[in-house]
Every structure is written in structure tokens, then in C-alpha cells.
Amino acid sequence: MTLRRWGVRCGSLALGLLASSAVHAHEPVFGVGPETIYEGGVGVEVGWDFEDGGDERTAVVDTELIYGVTPDFSLTLEVPHVLRRHTEDGTRSGLGDMLVRGKLQVWKRDRLNASEKLSLIAGLKLPTGSEHGDVPLGTGSYDPVFGIAAGHESRSWYAFGSIRYLLRTRHDGLNRGDRIFYDVAAGLRPWKTGYLEPDLVFLLEFNGIATAQDRDRAGAVPSTGRNVGWLGPTALLSYRNLMTKAGIQFPVYASRRGSQERPDLRAVLAIEVHF
Amino acid sequence: MRRTDQTEPYARLGSGAAALALAVLLLSGATAGASEFTLRVDGLACPFCAFGVEKKLLELPSVTGIEVLLDEGKIVLALREGAALDVAALDEAVRKAGFTARALLVRDLPGVLSRDPQGELLLTCSEPSVTFRLELDDLDARPGIEEGRTLVVSGSVTRLATQPPLLTVSTTTE
Image (tube, rainbow over all chains, first blue to last red; front, side, top):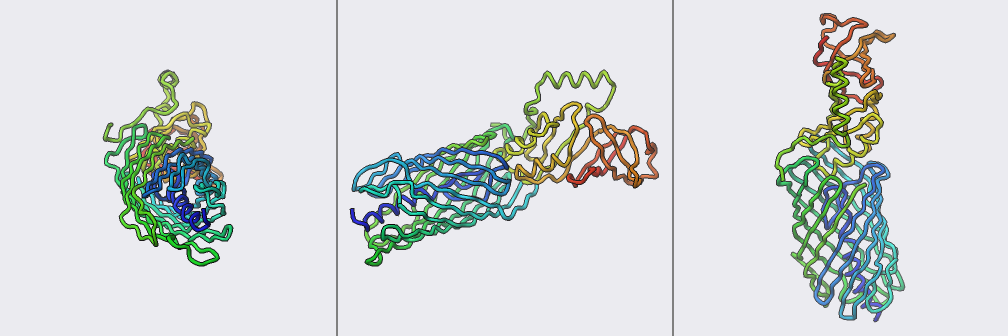
């Protein structure tokens, strides 16, 4: 497979790996919120992520480990295992590109039954997935990501917003287009329950991913670069230290260069436990 | 699914231990068993978030159980008999959980009055073991406020990290 076609394939895979994130407490399922975990706390999340777009389908089991260094600073390690990645060039499974991310809460306002928070996010995508073959599982590059997330949480309603920038570095002569992730979400808790009772929250999430064109020695790579906006409902059901979450999204707009397939849907089903 | 915030049993306080403690208090004639300590905590919006508060408070040697009242933003504490109560440690535990402790509410706490070298009024309690500095309105006009007297007080501590903690008294009984 040529370097250019390889760049196109890896682009859509990386999209799936970075669009979702660990949920610390109540946070968007497809985006990133400002929450951290309590000091010394350990969280484990296992999730199934699915994305479908024309001839390409990707299913990933994402395992995340979260540790609270301080109440304001958490570290997360994401380990994606690609269950199945199917493209017109074939099918493959294996380890994808891992991600190490830190979240620093720089501002917080606690009130009775409510809080507002603002956090800075920084991370690094590692080239742990195989970049070779007709169906690569990784990009072969170290790509840093930076961002900011804010949110409101109360007994009745939620609101979140975030923006992240993925700086994609050159590898093997190919410079993939940088990405901007922009997210907003709003949610409701329809029934207020007590501490040792199940708790259900519904969110409506909008997530946008704008990707610049890839470039190689010959210039801009055709059929790369796009801007996709996703919209859909998510639900978070928790009990004490256990949370299950599920969501599905459909594209509301998809601006694509060249002959790129239009994405169809993406979905997440995950469980998170805090210790 | 219940739709109202209802109180839940103390986490980790066995029914046998609770019954024994009540029997001892009744036999001793003391009112210490009726004392109640409640933290007012800001930022508590969801049960999943509150787990961290449970974890951090139960790490303290003096706390045997908690009861989280989410809608009121309160955590009722069950304290170990004979333990020393460290109010600043309660504040720190809530902070490490990611929340803000606004006040410690004290109800029906008996203690012995004394004065420190600066003349400040102190209340020394044995169950739990703790000394509060008292802030009392109309101090000179209140009957029974003299050193060596036993007093039962209710009130609140709003600056939990201060040593000794300052208890703003709302009611007193002898």
C-alpha cells in the first residue's frame, strides 16, 4: 500500500482512539470533562468502541487506568486493543496506539449540591500499534495532545465543554494533518436518588473533529482532511463506585476532501470502577 | 428505584456494635451517645462522586461509618468510642476527596468548661476526645458558664483547620 493510502487509513483509526476518553465521575462519554479522581484513587475502565464509515468498520476494546496523584491532578493510561478493523484492503486486529494523559484541575467552585470546574489536559499518543501492512493499527508517531475542559455538575443538570489539539508529527516522510476536537454536552438527572441507590444521568453530546490535510514530499495528500460533527444521546448508570455508560452518535455534518467515505455511526459501551 | 433522597444505614458500623454502644451510654447515664457530628460538604452532586468522600473519611482512625445525605449536602459521622476527634483531619479528608468542607455541625455534645492562659473559654470533651474553643454570645449573661462546670452544647465549626477548632455555640444546656 502506498504511503498516501496508508496515511488515509491511519487517520480514521486514530480518530476512533482519541475521540473517546475515560470518565471520571459524570463526564461526557465521547468527549473529555474537567473531573479528576480523588487523591490515591484508582479507576479502571473497560469499554467497547465501535465506528462505522462506509467500507471501514472498527471495533476496539479500550482499557483505561486512572490514578489520582492529588485531588486536582490525575493520570490516565489508555490501552486500545483493536478487536477488528475492516477496510477494503483487509481485516486486522491487535494492539493500537496507547495514550498517556494528565489532567490538572486549575479552578473549582464548590457550592451546595453543585460545582463548576476547569481543567487543563496534556497527553502523548504513543506509537505502540503496528504501522505496517495493508491495515495498520497505529500511526508510528509520537503525537502530543493539549486541551482545556470545563463543566458544571449539580443534582439536577450537567453542562460540559472542551477543546483539544492533537499535534501530529512527521513519520517516514508523511506529515499527517493536525486535529482539533471540540465538544459540548448537556445532561439531566431525572430522578434524584440517595448515595446507596442507582443513579441515572442522560446526556446529549455534540463532538466535532476537524482534521487538516496530510502532507508528504509531493505536497497535500488527496482525499485527506475533513471536518465531522457527531450528535447523539448517552446514558450513565452508577451505583456507589461502579458506573456503566453507553452512547451512540450519528454525523450531523461531514465535510470531506476527495473520495473519503462518509462516517455512519459510532457507539460506546463501557464500565468503570473506582477503588 | 426510590425517587427521594433517603437516609441510608451507616457504612461499616455493625448493628451489634451500635447496640452495645447505646447500652453503655444508657447505663452510664451520660448523654455523650446522643452527640451527633455532621459535616456540611459543598460540591456533592452525585453518588458516584461521593464514593471518594466515603473512602477518605473511613481512612481516619476515629471514623467507623458515614451516612451521606446528598440533597442536604451533609455527611453524618459515626465515631469510634474513646477515639480522639481531629477536626482538621476531617477537613483534609474531604479536601483529598475533591470537595470542600464548609462546616462541622455538633449537636448535644457534653464537656467541661475551662479557660486557656489567654482567657478564652474552652470545652473539653471525653467522648469523643476533643477540645473546642467556644464562641458564645452574651457570655457574661449566660447562667452556669464558669470553669469546671459541665455543659452540653450544639453549634458549628466553620474553620475546620484552626487549632483548637472554634465552635460557635447555638444552644447550651447544663
